Length: 299
View (cartoon, one colour):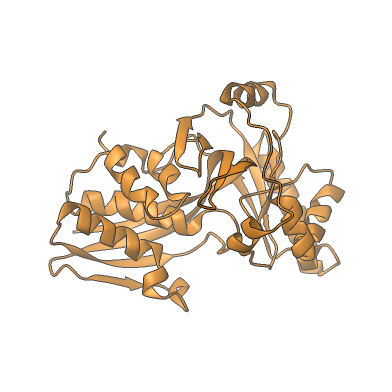
């Protein structure tokens, strides 16, 4: 049995506030997650020998113990006692180290797909418990819809977001999330907000809500990302860092407008001017109402 071209969508943090820090060092966050139609894809072929094999150009330099896809598959095997294994092929389109949750999304898609391929029958709550052990961003992809997140990212409430499109740009730098959260100059006491305040802001269409508390630290440590943000500002756009970066986005009510600005950025890249040199790629993306695999989970 096989599953081909199974999507793993990227996410955006529409805002990201650091509201505290636990005694164990983990940061307390508030954020809003939205999926976009930039996807990795994975192929799964069931094996009867219990082995987990992987293939794909993106695996270069990625040790098995650091591979979230393999960790997700093993966690499902252990939780269910499944005798099956899988051959898994990765096709990466989501930039690594961009704050778009590509690895977390791949792990969640693996849980959902193998739950179907192995007929293990776990529901959403069971899969989310496995997801929590894999990383802070993995649960929202199993949750399957836009979400307001609190705690360390595991407390999720559904959001009904308006239709939006996004211009996404990728600077060439890779950001270390651990280094950003460890920075002494990171703001860690932003006041908490209620989900209703965020929801009302979205309905009023007042632009991007709040801020990303990680952005100022990222910009100080990675001036190329700051220059990329200035390039978007110079086009008259409101700019937001997603996650810990390095990718930046702007929001639009219509995908066609996002595509116009994408072409402007691509022109800058091809001309290699001062702005384009700080941007490696650009995408025009639609915001998704829900995860494309949401209904692969029965309950």
